[in-house]
Image: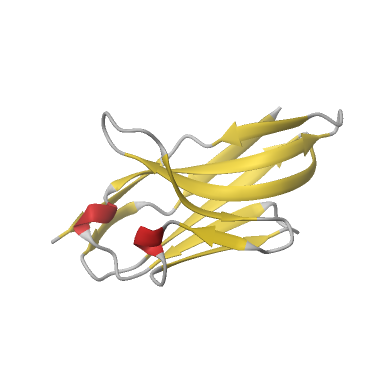
Length: 120
């Protein structure tokens, strides 16, 4: 059993910053790619940023230069530093991880989501 728990969402004024955290726990042997996705009401979940276990990153065009993804492999934790936030960044943000369990089974896991709201 693997759990991903996000924290750090909330309400911020346009131009402000938030830092999201995602902690993975449970029967984990190793973690591959971790990432953040977003989803609005009635919309598909879309990529925000990903980071491999080696630290290679990938960003959606809409957040390049404003958001930074990082991870601490010793803590099984990923972060999303969000700066220069805009009202169009409003969404529920979900943590994602590819995890190898102690049974040597790889699987995709999702957190429960954290709301990000930006006031104009």
